[in-house]
Length: 260
Image 1 (spheres, helix red, strand yellow):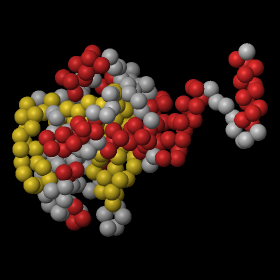
Image 2 (spheres, one colour):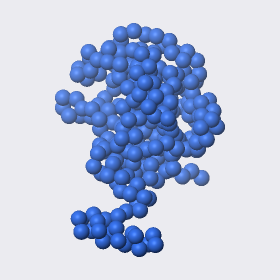
Image 3 (cartoon, helix red, strand yellow):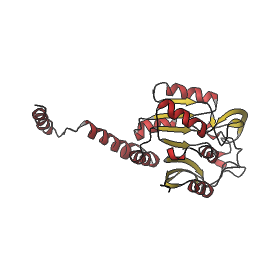
Image 4 (cartoon, helix red, strand yellow):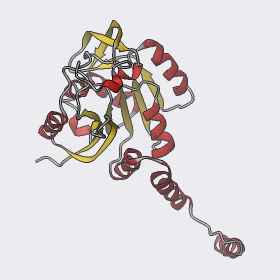
């Protein structure tokens, strides 16, 4: 009966130029649409990676206003857990209001780093530039007004080594995508995940081609550091440029190669 009804419907809709698709097939069509029609290079590539690796949790480190989490939902089509980390209280409060609408999106006010404790954090004039590091005096002039210290305040620092086992057990998740946008501090965040790398197949890190912060690694140093832990580039996408059109920063998407 079901087969006969399907044939009747197929004939009917074919007259108007439409065809029926099974639910699973329709979900695949949605993924393709999101990947190929909406997102930028990083979003499109993330969609491909998430088809390859069964990630069920994302650590959104340096979340700011939640733009990355919203991109995951609206452009990539990711449906798993998102844990956003934002140490600036007023920014985290706005972020938490956004997350209230999403049952699989949580916000934490800890910063992440190499070790636990309290550390001085610099809030910049443009809060997206806020960092544990001070601005490099030779940074591109286009950022001089935005990337300057407004105030310095203490924040609590946690490590992924401490948090991931707890979250893994509480939420019943198994595989983590680690996204970092911490204004030069990504290497320190990554160092605090040393015991969890088997659970982290994908790393997304903002790396510097032209240094904005005094202690930040260069892109060569950053890529070498990730390579030493078994990660190889999957996509390097320039996201800002100076007046010569030289790349200032890149989003680096890296995957962990199979280790013996």
